[in-house]
Image (cartoon, rainbow, N blue to C red; front, side, top):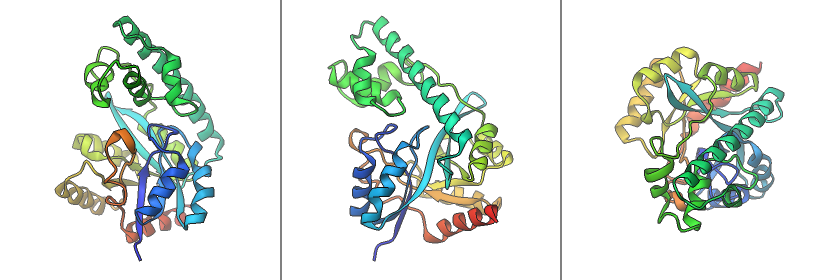
Length: 276
């Protein structure tokens, strides 16, 4: 029997396409037995997914992806096994939800100043009750006929160096690590292949619990390289598809990029040790 573990997926509560129920069904079809929903700054999809997952025999691991800032570079951290009722965590999510909205409004205003006819109402059709982000602006631009495809939105307008770009407000990695730890969770560096080694070294020194070794953006050599670092520093290993679905063109990733059972058991053992 197939036994797959995917600890990095997204739903429409952040920048994914599918609802938690739809994601769980897709995960079941791909033979996934353990799934973590790691939406950006949102835990809204977790309880919904758990209710559905019981029907399919899938275990849902609480998860979250947090944006931090290190040396003026955006760094993403993954949190696992967090208490989604933790008061400080909920305060953080509320604050960043508001900040995401303010950022989106500034970006839409910049687009309008560039002559593009787009409003926040257009964007909110796609964001609805989600943690609003740039993908929602891109989808609105496509629907309005302002661009031809998703990538064009980032390349011409809202990418990191685009004329309508606005930086997000981030917390420091140290603050994020404390937040995750206080919520009873484990912290992992997400897709480290996107960052320089000196930044990864800084995160290890800051007390990260592990590294996401398996990711679609990593070559086999990179995966082995990060596993070497995990062994060298006695860290934990995580992995997943970073699945968004739909327009993200990553349908093949779900069920393909998975974590080994031994690595997952090591994570569970660490949680039990921390809680004992």
